[in-house]
Length: 230
Image (cartoon, rainbow, N blue to C red; front, side):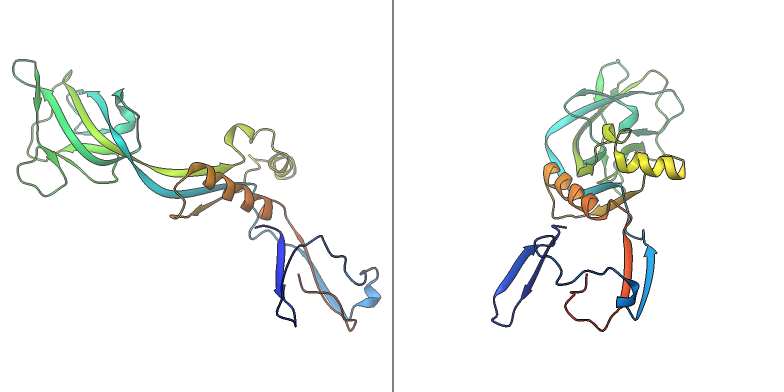
């Protein structure tokens, strides 16, 4: 990803140089210098958008989300609720409290936990994005406000170029003009060792810089020595 090359010479010294720092000992200027060759444009690793998914991070503060029942739904997704305090998350790490209106109209706590606990009236899964009533519970009536307090979890993510740059990025626009469509070739890599969005974006940029063009590959044989492979 760094565009550098390294090797150990005969004196056991480590050499580390930019690929452009040394000129080749001779130039390939004629096919007469070759005994055979092949030429191709190769895009197996090409991408003009790179996304890095890092580790999942658990929040250190609780979030509260509310839904208004419609008398039919039994499953309630985080993305469909209204966050009333804290930060909205895509996943549930744990649940602190769930309340629904009681007979007197005041909030009443109902038990919620992971599947398999007989006393639960609601269930959720760690890493899931919804809560649901257990099968033998009556559907909540229309207008009932369901309030959930939970600890969220989010996956660290970095993307390059950022989505607001896709419309002007030269590589994307070149593919779009040449092939039609969006012009986007997106690659996604998961790296659980990354726990910082800035680091994820830096890696995304490095991979886009490395693979963000369609290379021309020339493979050849020659009897003349001096050129290094690659």
